[in-house]
Length: 242
Image 1 (cartoon, rainbow, N blue to C red):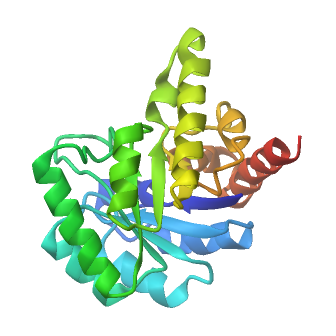
Image 2 (image 1 turned 60 degrees about the horizontal axis):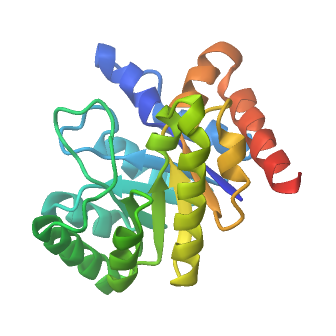
């Protein structure tokens, strides 16, 4: 299983003072040295954390694949096509949210049209495309119909579930992953995954990639980013081999 480290919140700390440190690009390179399989960054329309400069530098300096998360809007798609990362993940975006709070609602006409246009555009440019979606069977089937290569399952409901509901949400993720694989989709997962809850998700055999950011960056404040990445990688590896 691949571990992609999201370095958005290194940029969040930088932007709090509007200065040049800590540098998310440097952090990304350090995660690569620690064994991360790839880097994820979310370029938001309001530029609240990651900046265009960060993506520019990452595309020139990263030695592992870059997964660029963007909303399905013209400005972001134009930038994505210019940068040509290894993968673009289309995510929903609301200005008032602190972080992305759910998957794309593909079953609404407006969302479907915008995502269909975005995936068509990226496909024409030869860019691998993923959709950030809830573990909902109908949404997964629509994702497959759109012709994307992958989906990323939103694990937020699992992460936020009470102990009594956790297994129910885990089974939901496992069923969604099985369905997605049967439809020919690569299956990734992320959101709210921590050192305490990642093991069960990592054990789902159909998953091939996890995107984890906030927990790793939070741990890095205490122990350093390289150790934080290695500790998460070790948990994931043990979950796959146990």
